[in-house]
Amino acid sequence: MSVTESTGTDLTRLLHEGQKFSGPADWLTPIRERGAQGVAGMPLPTRKDEAWRYTPLGFLDENDFRPSTAGAPDALQLSDIAGLLLTGFEGDRLVFVNGHLAPGLCALSGEPDGVEVSALAGGMGEVSQELRGHLGRIAEERHVFSALNAALMSDGAVIRVPPGVVRERPIEILHISVGSQAPGLSHPRHLIVLEQDARAGIIERYCSLGDNAHFNNVTIEVALGAGSELAHARSQEEGPNARHLSDLQVRLGERSRYRLVLAALGGAWSRSDVRVTFEGEGANAELDGLMLAGDKQLNDVHLDIRHEVPNCSSRETFKGILDGRGRVVFDGRILVARDAQKTDARLSNDNLMLSRSAEVDTKPQLEIFADDVQCSHGTTVGELDGDMLFYLRSRGIPQVQATRILCQGFAQEVLDRFDNPALRERASEQLAARLMQKGVNPPDEGGTGSGSIR
Image (cartoon, rainbow, N blue to C red; front, side, top):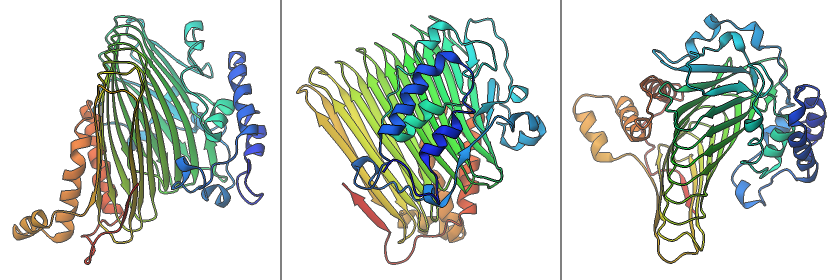
């Protein structure tokens, strides 16, 4: 089926309604038309689709999502979002409210380094012709939601770092979802281009003001030129009634280096799709991720690492923490093409289960068509170390507190990979607060929950 029942979210209606608010930029018309055709021709994913087998979409029937409009950004002041800002952050900040740029909340240094920072909807001046040519060529519409993003892209950051420029100050892209009477649906679209030998850091953060239901459907396109380097940090800390779907697609030129650190901590339903394609020899990608799933929370990560050329390396390390009836889905695929000799690729997924009611479905995959490679993958599903728990309790630490200490220690390996100290501190604080909020308790007696390795 291509739409849901009338009691829920009708994608065809969303398409027609959203086109009224999609903005006047004529140069986006071909991409939007292509996306609209995709929405009309693609079915809604079901459990019969392997990539969506463990990702239920029942929330679409339970909520009548409506397109978020640009009305909210002007209503917020800096004092309203003070609790969401990074303490001591030294960098530039772009703020989007319900998917639309909020100029009054942004902070740009105006460094004369030639870095181009603009917004799709024109709120920061026109997007250059050169950057316009990149949009829509990096990301493919892989499912109906990415097609919906292409058709209805509301706004987003457009960033270009010129050849040889080293951008010392990171650029933060902060998304804030503000509740309204009807559950809102936003379609942010970001484009990040680093030219030859450029270097930069990008921080993406997704937060909520209030507990209202909303759905962020995000697409991020990244292109790295020869010898460039991008440190990309992503933190999803949305409210308990949020739904979050992101499609990140990255293309790597020769000798480029891409580092991604993802902390998916919030939302009732969260899915992160990541595709990295090696297009030039000598490139390297390192991806680290943390997934937290408390009671009734779903956290899903799908990796697609495509080694298309020789002499490249990749490493992926992802961890999950589950409690109550939480659920984690991890699907990690490494493809080594026939010509991609001398590939070095390693993938691991470790999961910590604190409840017999929790469930993890993990599927690490290697598809190798070359014969001179070094590749490995592995996954673990287990409970807290009983000896460590006993040690802490013997030092007078209550069992609940000892459990939380060990959970944070398990997660800290990933969080420590955040380059920016302000973000690293924020992520650690968010994890601690959410472990407390979700009531993370000592492991159930009698074993852990359901773990499936496919």
